[in-house]
Amino acid sequence: MNLALVPLNEDFEIVKIKKIKNDSQKKLLNNMGFVEGALVSVVSESHGNLIVKIKGSRVAIGKDIAMRIMVNHI
Image (cartoon, rainbow, N blue to C red; front, side, top):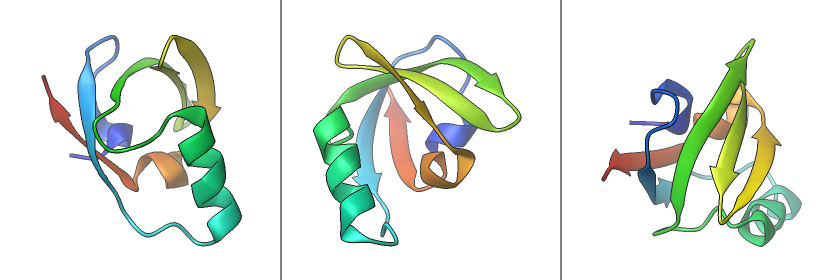
């Protein structure tokens, strides 16, 4: 399942990040903590954009990126 479809305030583990358009976006995601094995939860959603809690921080990501992040429920 992708991150855009998960219910709010439940923990998930990132299992795969599908191909990202360019290297700078991929590097930015890695720097924010979006790597395989990281725990993530969606705090809120507005018009498809998500506020995500990852590694103790809250980060805003767009729906297009969220759809490329594959997760499993823990």
